Image (cartoon, rainbow, N blue to C red; front, top):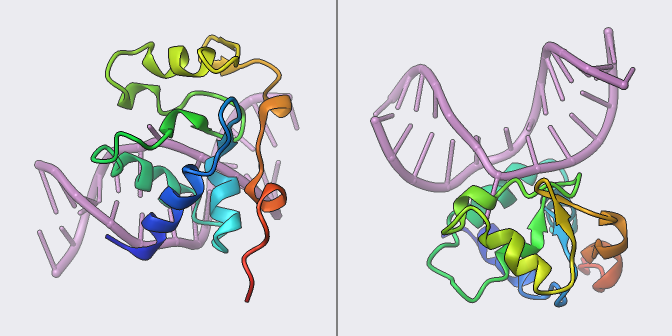
Length: 111
DNA sequence: ATCTTGACCTAAT
DNA sequence: CATTAGGCCAAGA
């Protein structure tokens, strides 16, 4: 497994409860601003890590693009709503209010 | 070995 | 406004 994947998991684990972030934000934080797809791919490969709060990662529009990868089509939404986030039509309401940006919330990765 | 398919994003048209 | 094009690179066929 590549180091990049591990870094993605490390960031995802730091997402506070009740907050969400996006694939691109994680990619940017890891220094690969154009590798957002790889973050998504890393999540796809993260099924062997049940403790990972994968439901707190959505796309940049607040859309639950990965809900089909959870067991049960409503599970991702239920997990988010159980943390106080409102979801309607696979879309997070007031997304910007819940958005958690690792680039500002975490110390920037030092050189 | 090649080809296709993605839990994506940005910039340009 | 909407649409396209390009970049990213790991797996599965």
